[in-house]
Image (cartoon, rainbow, N blue to C red; front, side):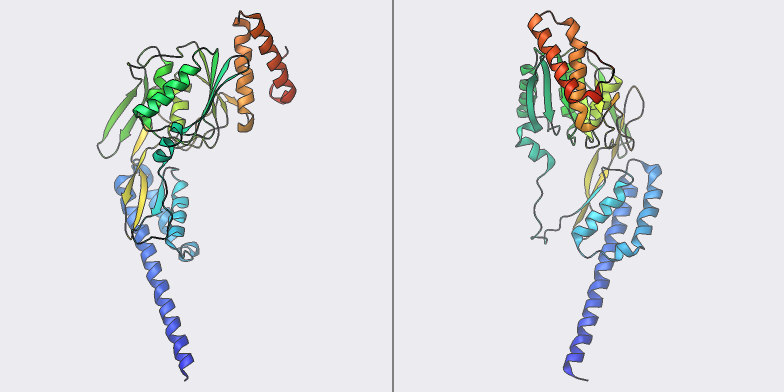
Length: 344
């Protein structure tokens, strides 16, 4: 037998050993993940179902086809997201020097105006805010929020666009909400498994109420609205403080935290769950359901039309009334299917 045949045999043996080693690592990661979920996941009645699903996945051809750590992390995340969209798995080994570093959600918010993309006054004196996250509660982020709301404080209605808002800080939800309630208001509660305790979140008393009821508020949501943004919308809906327009949100109500698992991986596992004081439940798995259902791309025009229609009979200024009438006619011409029963 020639040398080249020995070389081929050795190569095949080495490859087989490498594959077996990788499969062993992948299985160890999966089992470590399962143990951590059983110990930490807030919805304990779901852990047996999650365990069975992951063990079935471990025995599948798809699992044995995984070649890289990042692929394993992505596939495990995908499997877990069928149970809870806050689950995530990442490969973060210190030896993984070639992997791009990911900027954290809150750092990205902090360097991008606390997530505020647009603050403007629409024709007819309707305020509009588009923001994509709830930043950490700092003096800088509070100043950004306060400046935006103060700028719009003389408008006649307000549209908050959360269609692409991925969530963030529960404390920022409190702070922003506090500008809309004249009295101290119970917004939400969170049960934490680790401490077996429930914490209540109320509006802050030392925040100026810029938009007290009955000032009209419209919140736009979509299937991209997630987590803290869903909480904000859900709270306002059930407190009767806003009209929600758009599509059902993504459905993630369980706050999470990171836990290290084996072989340089970490898992984001939901450790708490929201409990609304009015509904005594939350939006996990079902999303926040809007009052007015419309495709998310049409939600702004729909809410804008509703806001103008709502204020037009209460406006004393003749020029503003004419401006509102012109804008309503323009919106009807552009999107007549959204307003089939309305006449000017």
